[in-house]
Length: 369
Image (tube, rainbow, N blue to C red; front, side):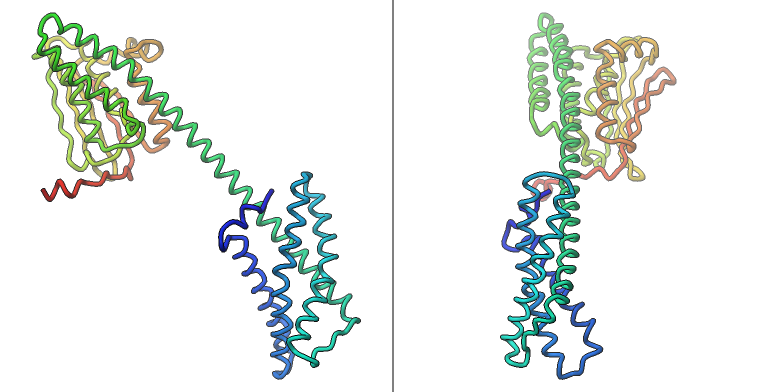
């Protein structure tokens, strides 16, 4: 436990609390005696209690320095309690005598020093210092608990961010392998098409390797990289792949984690090709309704639960869906829905993210232009 951090700055929290504490002490002391004093003695009361509170600030600060030395040597609450008792007993009389002499100087001969009042007055101020010490130790305990809680929260956030980054970077070699396989298949047949695919791949990799994509970004940016990925697949499969994208402008401005939509689309193409006779159809829809961002990816074909289960357990084909499931659990605990269903010869993946998903700021200059 340490209060050293509290003394940094021109007017730190520690000194603000000190001032408030001793102002409150002076006010309570005056109000407690005010009803029983005649009016002519009120100025003297204000001077006495004011000087006592004024001296209480440096006295308590000296006592705090003693506590810091005791704390620096280690030990549990017992050494601090002993230091508080001894320190209060020693500083109480010093405080009383100093405040009495200062008040006497301010009031002149009308405030003679009475030695007989020292024991009783010292006891009162020693008790006041014990109360201050209890408040100080409580304040230090609160500060340390807050700091420990903040450190724990920071460590948890860093751990979660590391897990999310690890899951995200897991996608890159998987996607790169699939993309290079597609390009290789086209190189001998159509070099112009292969060059276009390489250009699209470069755009996807630029997106994947940008540090900013490890955080949240507008859905429209994710859609841009999805379109580039689909360009690669369309160049490879031609008429055998039909793609439709229908995402509302409101949905495009919502923030989502980078590379969240892409693996779902890649998964749709991969499994759809395996289970579709004829042309593969893939559609992407995005809407915002009732404070929910809803993304739907539909592909022709069948779910094949047994095969999908095997993929999720061991194969690369299921890495996209498994990855998204884990990332959502970390990023949106309790505020998302991911459903996979099958019907009418199609497979639907529905992702719902509970808002508020912060909207990305629009480019006003572009809007004006």
